[in-house]
Length: 150
Image (cartoon, rainbow, N blue to C red; front, side, top):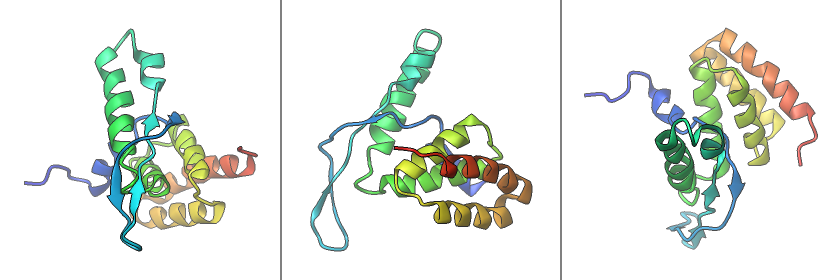
């Protein structure tokens, strides 16, 4: 039995909110290229508690502690750049072209996704998820990659 009808829906589960501040973590995995342990960077997120803490404390905790504290923090297995690519792709494929897409594009840029890579990602998605979705995503991509982000 398939858990998800659309393949990118599973990937989209990590796309609920933006990444907060980066800290240090203790998780390790073996780097497949040189068999050296690779240390995970612990992701610390507070947006859930800040925005929904009083209204939906369980959801806020799932967002901050599970989604980011556990899933995004497994970046020793799947680096932040690739996690950002998956997240942006899942949002676009689902047609979510609101401020959350812009935020995740900004995060992708901070995580090393270049302008040329983002343009290629969106172009690739156009053929699989829909031309109008890609067209809408390009509006945010142009804005994000024209800003001077530190």
